Length: 216
Ligand SMILES: C[S@@+](CC[C@H](N)C(=O)[O-])C[C@H]1O[C@@H](n2cnc3c(N)ncnc32)[C@H](O)[C@@H]1O
Image 1: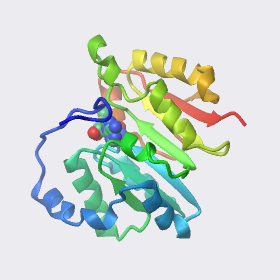
Image 2 (image 1 turned 180 degrees about the horizontal axis):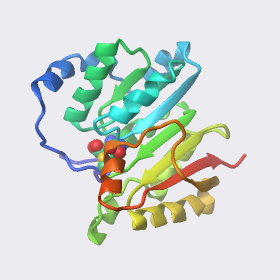
Image 3 (image 1 turned 90 degrees about the vertical axis):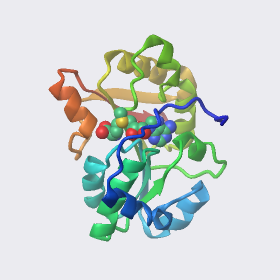
Image 4 (image 1 turned 45 degrees about the vertical axis):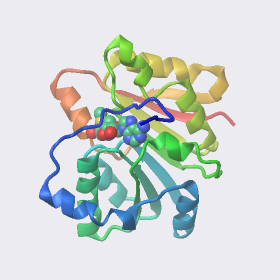
């Protein structure tokens, strides 16, 4: 199969539990396919936020429940994680989360001019080997895509636990092409650590956090 983008994720064949399989049967009710779908769903919300690569969705779900006036678009390609998040949405009858289950670049490439109030990218796949760095999601062309989805009021929050990924991100954010203003912060406001962040801390890696906005 030919991909439009070099995959930034490894297709995980990890075990899916019976409960996750059961919840995945309901995926269609929570799925968006385009930015137009987001626009339609957003009518009754104050803001729209985007979470890219929510993993198992545990910390993300908790965060969404503190902001019922925000519509969260949750992007992940990993079926077990999607099943896990769906379980939480369904069991709590949560009304403010919709899911995009493909490469997020397919959605951001859409020509519809929707923008996001906040965008979160927490522990993007690090691709630690030098020869795999080209697979890293956070590169100049991806920042171009994000830039088009932000206004001067938008905020982009990024966290990585890989020092050389943080250096590359910092370099890209400073590129004049993007018109970004970024600063290092000590945590993402109001959010618990994610599964991968907790693992990084346990394994002795330092967490890096960026808050990014567009220069007016
Ligand atoms: C290292 S995990 C981190 C998960 C979670 N944010 C956490 O911190 O626990 C990165 C996740 O991003 C997802 N991902 C990577 N590239 C993606 C893409 N292009 N579109 C959507 N999800 C992506 C992967 O499937 C993976 O689950």
